[in-house]
Image (cartoon, rainbow over all chains, first blue to last red; front, top):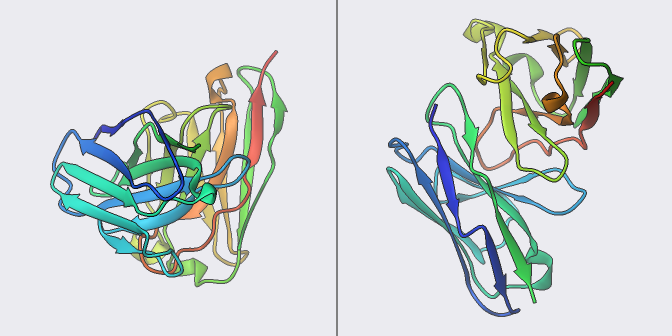
Length: 107
Length: 118
């Protein structure tokens, strides 16, 4: 099983700042890495796939980067609505796995 | 697009079958997955069923392997999660989704809550 480790666990930033979230895989994934956003009481929503491609309708403030074992989700010009938990998920193996999540708080 | 049902309260050792009705995409070629989220915790991938044209095979995460099974009825655009020998640690909201990573994903449903308790 591929283990994904996300950091930091919690991030507290102000509107207008930039958030940088990390995801490290225990084995190489090529670019089979996705990012999800989950707001309280809601189902997860896919933001990024293929490590760096945005889903249709996702603002370009959200960007993904990385390959192999180290990946990053960057959110520019933070808005209050970006407050959520963000999960990475790998689909490089038959057994998909999620990271434990990073909680982003907007002060 | 995806509507889960069948959750509820069940005693440890019991069984439950969840359903997920799909619409808005070509279901019979879709690989479908179940993901769960214990209260206040993160997402856990449970298992997947491939399309019949890709063999219809299933894969499961270690914690549920041998206890859970997934099936599909393409005539009803529905995927099922059969859960046996339930444990208290299976308590979670269960979501189904399409195993798809591309520009136009199907939005997840709201999930169905399974509570395993005596």
